[in-house]
Length: 248
Ligand code: 13P
Image 1: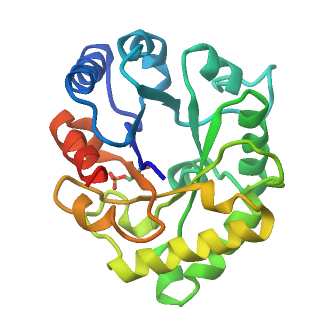
Image 2 (image 1 turned 30 degrees about the vertical axis):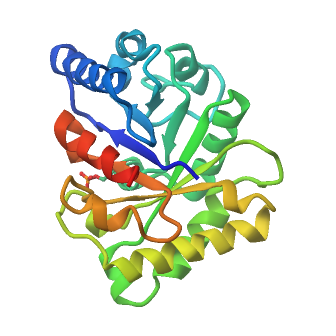
């Protein structure tokens, strides 16, 4: 399966620097595209402006969250249809920062996945343990519960992406050991296989302190089908180096 390298810009980027970054990536991609799929998820304010900059490059656009309802009185929220209308093909759902800062539960994430699917956006559903959960030996139990709670029935043919993001690895410069990543990704694959015969086609991304240096060690690990990159995705050269490592 071709790997997917996704940049989650989080709450970073004003019009000037956000469009400059998108233009820099678009120019590189047109010059010589890497042997992987690329996706950037800028802040919502930049989506409509960046969409035309990516047109024809093969770089996809994604949102960072959506509301579970299709429309209505939800001040400050964004619907899946609005993301689609702005040019998105993907949406990140259940990121640990949203679970923590906005008290998002598995049940809410599951409804958001339904909303994304109804709009034909590809959901990237994030799961991952805290440091305390890992230390207590509960990593797989926590991830199993997040998967079963956050995913609707998987019978359909709708595409789906899972991102394994250990909470303690996000923005810290720390990453799990290679065999720890392999264990969790194999577990996620086997959990998915319980619900769908097409588990082998679901991309499972690793996220958490992926950078230009460690990408070449992380991306070849079994069942790692790409990366969800935070900080390093804000630097065109670093993001590009990660993308090139995905094609090796
Ligand atoms: P960092 O790459 O900055 O650790 O962030 C990872 C992340 O949360 C991507 O969604």
